[in-house]
Length: 398
Image (cartoon, rainbow, N blue to C red; front, side, top):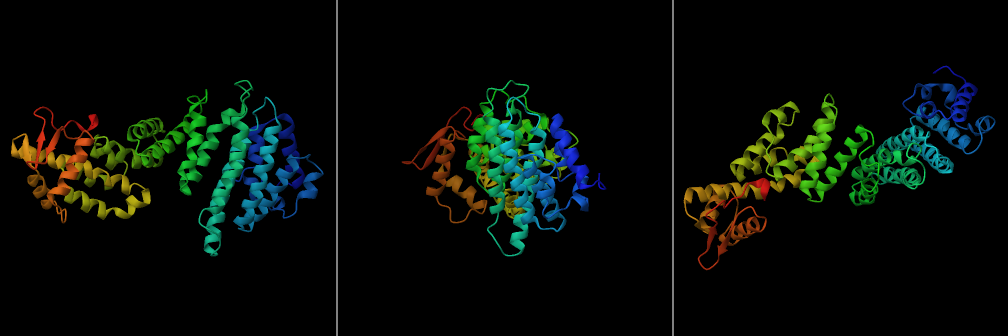
């Protein structure tokens, strides 16, 4: 493919278009295909030559692709992104004009993916030149992808075998990647609603469903909906290709903290298998109710936990650690009426600074409210009165 002339390339595009060969046309417009390295196709002003062979709006799309090849060959990612933006906007019009056909979906997947990847590189190039705000190009790229998504979502009347709605999930996943990168998670909500209300929601390809569940699971985690987060992330982990260790590890980074918050401690062998030993110390400290060790482990791995975006989620494990510590105190006291002072002493032993009985009572009240302790505080006697039966319910039941 690398040695073909421009006319030969354009005739291949024309042929793919005329026979409705989506995969062939997708390859001819993809930046993962070898033709992009062909110097004969790296043209700064290709419009006149393209217009002689192709009709509108296909000519505009292909001309923009060839100019993007030229920009890419010159390592000008900002220009390449602009050209790819034209490719996507032309394609959205083209897609919208087609009735009861979805053979163009493979083309949509590649042009939208390339738009996102060029936007990432353009932002990087702008930052190194001291221009622009972080993520501004990437956020702008979402508009082009959203235009294609609207065409797909609106194609409700077409028969199931020819509907463009089959392309929805691929674009939703592209948009998720952008919104998570630019920290605009609230924009995921309408996309989730669109997928969940679709009749096709469980019938998309497995790889797309795994990606979708991974991002929605993370969204639920950040919204503190841990049961839903566990359900979605567990699906992603179980259905992810067994040999894809990188992706399985990525899912576990979020699934492990969620499971711990629900009182389900992972096996140490699993953590070691996926090179997630950072969680071993966290898990041990939580199980033992050892607040001091938990703080030490969180501090030790603070940088990586912040990079993964889970540091604040792991901080929430402190409440479970309090519960496990206070359970040990109650077992030592061997009575169902325990002085608040006993818990304060335990907290001081765990190096909780400047803690007094009032602060301890607040922690206990929070544990009672969350259903992690069955009992009540007698303020008159400054005591915690715990239930004689199952005073510390299993964490998974709380």
